[in-house]
Length: 274
Image (tube, rainbow, N blue to C red):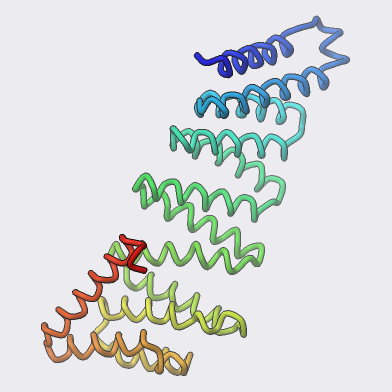
């Protein structure tokens, strides 16, 4: 154990001793002060554990502080310390991290802080993505999108919906992916600032159409009617090129497209090529 960790352990012991000290009368008249002092010890201990990169012990110390915040009816401070605990466990134990983020989310929902709840559902979703638990990641992206939209934060909500659509497409649920991409495109088209981004989502919807539909051209015309500028975009021309290859059984044309896709992946993997 390092010197920093030893000091942190001593602070945690002081916090525990502070809560256990005194008889009935002392506890009755100084309970709040005892709790506050113990919380300070726990947070100091947690920060020292963080300095020592002992993430699990830092997380437990923040959690102990949060529990005392809750006992002292300081719910928002409790939520903040549960988040700190989650952030620490994010470094070493994703299951524990999710557990503490969810405790914070429960408090945020109870207090009507739905944007904060959405933000932390999104953090959980991103963490689960890294763990390849995609089904659970989608569940939390859905909850995040719902809370964001409930609070009229449509931009953040749409980012979560986009992730859901991506995973839906990868799993073969093209109908769901198409509907989501179309929904985001419609939202962008209603905004003078965002309307130029709509072609990106119409293109992604069109790619899903190619994987699932037989009457693609009529759907593409619907997209052009929605957003006339889409017809002049490179994205639209690429879709038409792929569609013609499919309709005419032109495997050579599809080969070229496949090779271009591989070149794109090389650019992504080697930043110096960008």
